[in-house]
Amino acid sequence: MTDNNKENKENKEHNESKQDRKAKKKIRFRTMAVESESRYRTLLTDKFKNRKQWIAPDESKIIAVMPGTIVTVLVRKGQVVEKGDSLLILESMKMQNNIISPRHGKIKAIKVAAGQNIPKDYVMIEFED
Image (tube, rainbow, N blue to C red; front, side, top):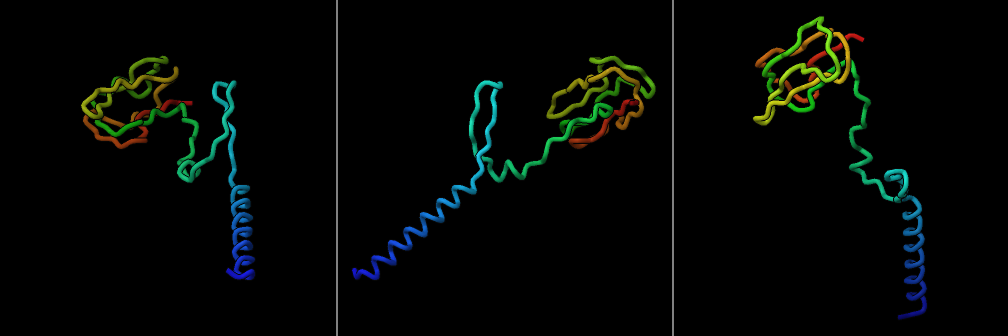
């Protein structure tokens, strides 16, 4: 190998290592705390970065967390319910799920009926604010 070829090869290797260093600098590590005692450094994947962002739930609406069929509606419009009272029965995957009230309040609207098929994220009941 000639001296000129050796120099070109060394320059390429040097340039590649420079590019590798630049790429490593672009990687952003995130620090996360687990139980506020342990700290970990991690990389965020593209899947994580492009995920659907979490939105705080609206406590005035009862939203279906899974698709299913309404078996029974146990409340009526205008009724005052306590936290923990049963509102309706939602059947999904051959299981009957008792939907309970997350708060005390008055029922503003019931948007479902017995026998109705509903998709995920469907608003079933609304409370007055």
